Image (cartoon, rainbow, N blue to C red; front, side, top):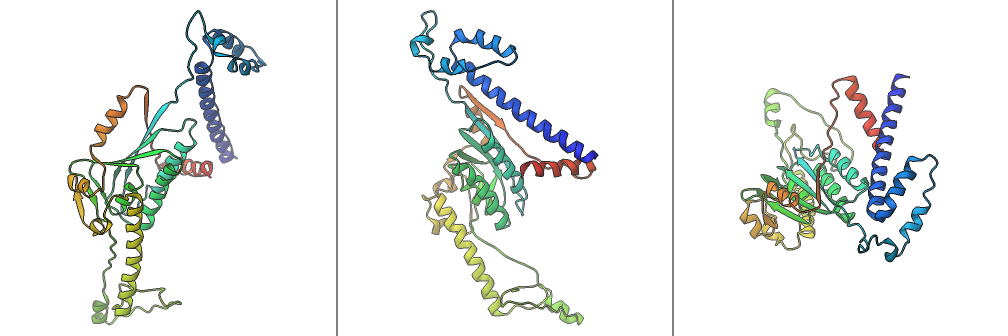
Amino acid sequence: STLEGFWQQFRLKSLIDKQLSLQDELLYGLREALPKAALPRLRELLKAPNTDLAWLAGAAAASPADEAVDGEAPKSPPAARNVVYVLNFDGDISASRSELLAREVSAILDAPVRPSEVIMRLRSPGGAVTGYGLAAAQLMRLRSAGVRLVVCVDQLAASGGYLMACCADRILCSPFGAIGSIGVISQQPNVAERLDREGLRVIQTTAGQWKSTLTPFQEPTAEQIAKVEQDLGMVYKQFADWVKANRPGVTIEEVATGEVWYGAHALERGLVDELQTSAEYLLSRLSEPGCEVFALSCERPKADSLQGALAEALQEALLD
């Protein structure tokens, strides 16, 4: 079918791109590892069909004296590439970018060259604990893989945004960046009184004592309010424990109050490590000799057309 043919072409292109990337990496490693005298021979052999490259093992095992050419000192092993990736996370109330962040982290960890550092430019007012908890878990994958993580906050990292920032080895903040809001809030309107005046009722049936607590259609009981406060306290404690575990230098009783601090005040309380904008930090990394800095972004294809819908479905299939 047409869809199957499109899928096969898409998959073939992905495999070819991956193969070419691996070939480039191999050639780069060979060029750095082989003695200069062997490079002309390597070029001749690569041009010929059915080439046996077993001799490379002998060249790699040659003694340092054998590798010296025309009186030159033996060549030292190639230095590891200093690769840095830059990610951007602009958070909303549901942390909807957490799915795309997962794909970006997977791409970094699957890359042929493991980066020395990942820089995240983070801006978020916080939101749903489940969404931001998932986003933070994606960042912890980098830490677990031994990749250094630096989070830069130019404007705002509050509540769930700061929960994400805590995953970093180092947090940088601009002089007036807003940091903190370590707390939990829950609210909803209640129209029970108005419904009573209009002579309307909402009938609700549940199974399980606490299947429903607060609803907009009924006046809550003291017991229901106490249960909601208990649930919020549980989430709050988990949030505070997360901050304390990842920022052991903070006095958690002082900072887990729901307050927001700006720049220098956040630094005084140990919520950030340095006052510096993301632009300053990126320029410092770009100026380092041999440092390769790449911006990485995964975006959702527009699904307002058949082509966009197919592209999104294929992208998800390839990542499964």
